[in-house]
Length: 241
Image (cartoon, rainbow, N blue to C red; front, side, top):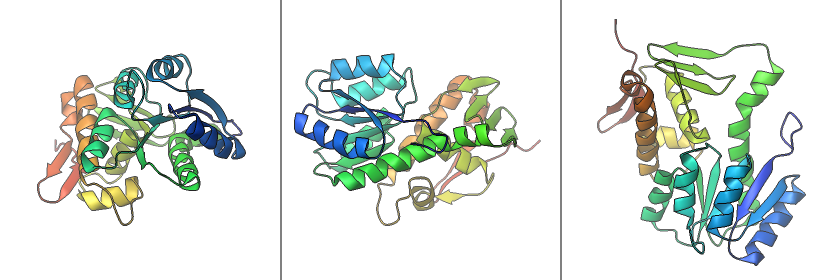
């Protein structure tokens, strides 16, 4: 259960019945409501029909694979996705993040660790909803061409609402909370991804790229606020009048 008493609804997608049963057991023990899918087609249909709080998505599936599902889902929804895969190579991780996944777990994995990752992703995605229902404050960051309503978890660029994944939103809000401050990739991995000792720095680059692309479709001026500081990292630069 989250802080407002809502039972989170999770879709577990894996072609191995043993893994689905294992994940169901551990997640139901934590109070989550679980649906299952064993192939890409049924997973995509269920994820489009139902507004899940999180999807655990195996990369290698019969028919439509996890990357294709992730890309298709991202055209319509910002549902948090944790990718499960037996392939741990760096290129596969980057490919998953480019497709829009929020986290990445390599098989074989510890079920307890996976539950911890699930809780972390759900906590990040639901925190602002809790603020908007439990407090009367209205936390809004306003810049030229860009507005971030943190309580409503809403981003507008050029007056147009922009749909972001939880991780994209968290990255943008983190940069926007300290405008004109330069953050290294290592610092962003530590503070946004909670990676203390490891992490692929290209994960940051991939999310910055996706964030710029989404903002640019609504307002090129808003997208241009995210600056690359070569050899260092990134910052959100406020236009000087």
